[in-house]
Image (cartoon, rainbow, N blue to C red; front, side, top):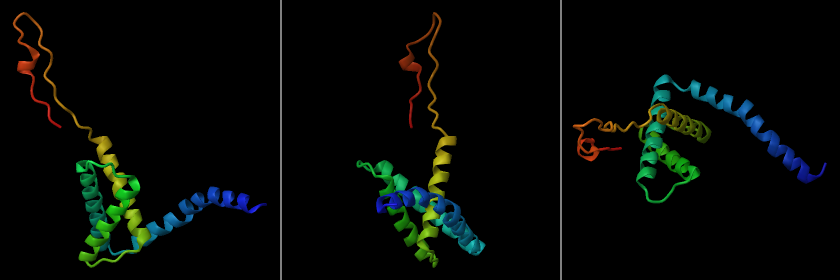
Length: 137
């Protein structure tokens, strides 16, 4: 086997190793945290992700996923430090990813509904523009 083939094989196998060994280990490490620290760490990671998403929505520039993750991780570290909690970087990554997943699930399950006035029909109808309610998002 050539060195290039070995590198390709590692690139193929590595994700499977990470998902079967490393992620369960991280989940186990999180479970070892006292319940109050788990709740606080999860809350701080969620706050950081929500803050970055809000910043991204208000920003005129498009932020990449990696940039948003980096900003969320930095914000979460600051929030956790202020709460007196120190976490391993991989555990914090997992909390950030979990918060992003939950945020995306919440967005998908709660679509924005904009009410629109029904079209006027009949001989006494007025123009739709005068009876329609304002649409806001």
